Image (cartoon, rainbow, N blue to C red):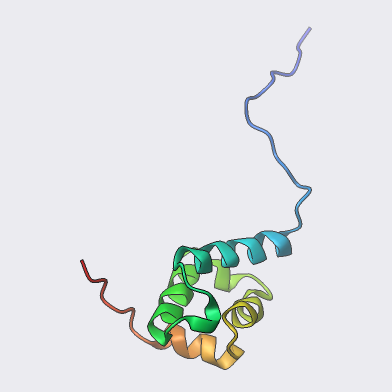
Length: 90
């Protein structure tokens, strides 16, 4: 008799993709330690670049969600993406 092996890994498909995207955007914003209302343009540019590096901007609806959470327009999110990433100060 062949019995399926149990795995230490499991999948959780209870959380819709939309919620995962929203949560990840919120996590990246929180990493800055400043609320979007008080973020500088440089900080918002960093957030947009970071989200793009993670591939979130390629997901349907993500750009609108990023704009909403950063409190900017969708075209502004794309403008931030086209700005060069600021140098990190050591």
